[in-house]
Image (cartoon, rainbow, N blue to C red):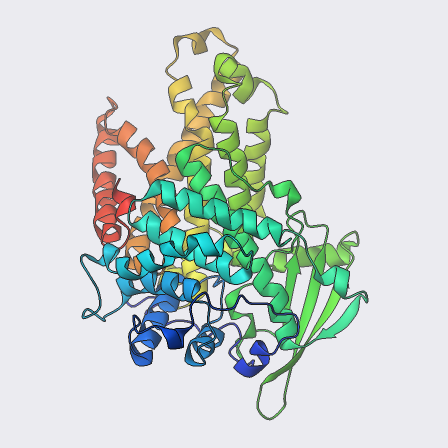
Length: 488
């Protein structure tokens, strides 16, 4: 298990020539704020390449917002955006073995380059671009790891506003490709997919930062018309040559077929076919979407649940708000959480056998399996956690038996979900270098319930909580080396 994800999965464009990616007629990148050739403040290209590898190996394993080969090519040809490069190096250094250029503890090792990126912010916000959104998101992760909450929050806000400015929340492929069945060049398809990944990464940053701070988010899921991104491994030679992609509301569904050169196996084109989701024979393919889409759907549920929990309009009528109305937001969200699980293929559900299989595999799916189920379990905890307080309220006994049963069932659901997070903590620690830093929020939410159980009168539950807390402290110890924010 300790060897899990020691190697970076192949790039999602591993069969697309870098030069073709660079020559895409629709790709618009921002000119470097400072040309690489005009600065001697960077390490040699050999060291730069190792730092870039460190970033992609540890921070972009599941849904990278830029392509490693394309980015290395831009660095080598001195055409990359310097703000993006500085931000990427700042994060990558903490996972690199280049100790000679690291400064201070691991989490602060890239401060030299982070400070250079921060000095460019005034220039960056003047021009909305994909490069700048990517740089802001990466820099926000660095600031989060350095326990600089206000900066992290601000940079995420800049990135999301910039994404809106560029119209990334809208899906362009249906506007520009009028036929229901078309053949896309690899570079053109990748241009569309990069927009999706950058937008949805902005969305997830927005929702996790809002959840952690209790503040309103920027992006409304109902405004997100752009398709959900596909998994990173869809272009692997050993993968199926067919894959599917849907919109968040599942009103749009696309089937893709990969065409390859019979001799070189190079991808020559991607055939796109829009499917009519009103037809039962097409709707079954909605369950063929990958883990990336499912995790993003859980992120949407996170935004809805935190919105419910953080608003004050139910505080004075807590029983009615949570349980008495079968059409309450609480009931609807619990139903959506159940539907998230029900939509998973059997081999992806949270069972002991599937967990053992994930532990034995060395691939992206094993990481996404842990992320997806930890996030989902923490959402169950977050939504049902108030029931623990409500169950002890004197007024509960004066309510109907049906309502009391609902409260106690909610408590049981919350405790079981917290236990699920605890079970996966060991896996999270083993793979901490490839986990997104914001997964610590899921750990924190579950830990609040475990801590509460440490002080209950039931001796068995008390001892169980004490044992579980040791795993949570171990997580803090392991993750704190790279992201000390998780210990605060």
